[in-house]
Amino acid sequence: MNAGAFRAAGTIFLLGVLVVWLIRPIGNACPDVDKLPAGSTGSSAPSLSPPLTRTCTYSTPDGTKARKRYVPVLDVLVFAVIAGLAGGAIGLLGPGRRGTGKTLRAGPPGGERERAARGS
Image 1 (cartoon, helix red, strand yellow):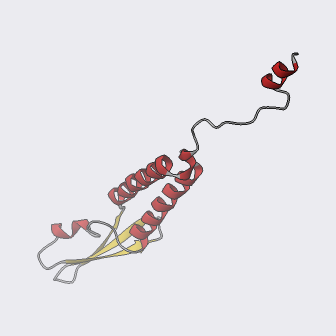
Image 2 (spheres, one colour):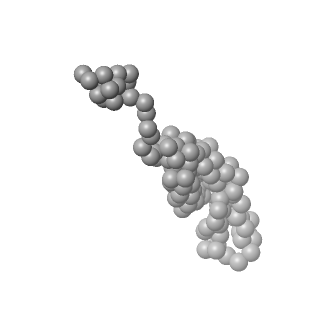
């Protein structure tokens, strides 16, 4: 693959991870809310400690609050696959691959044909 394909794949992966971390995960932002009593809620926010994690805050109907860190591993893997596919497609179809055929170049002056014509 060429450098442009690697740059594109890296950009797609980095932007995808930042979107998942800072804006919203692909799947359920707080996956453990279904284990709590009925009527419980959960909210998710980006966490800086450690980076690339999200903090879920759960609230039960009786007022109990809990926090848990969530690492969006599956979301990151999804973006890794998407970035790999995009990089591979760019590498195969991009402009760097079109010129891989043999090109004809002019030889150095005084090549075989000129020597034969001179009789040397």
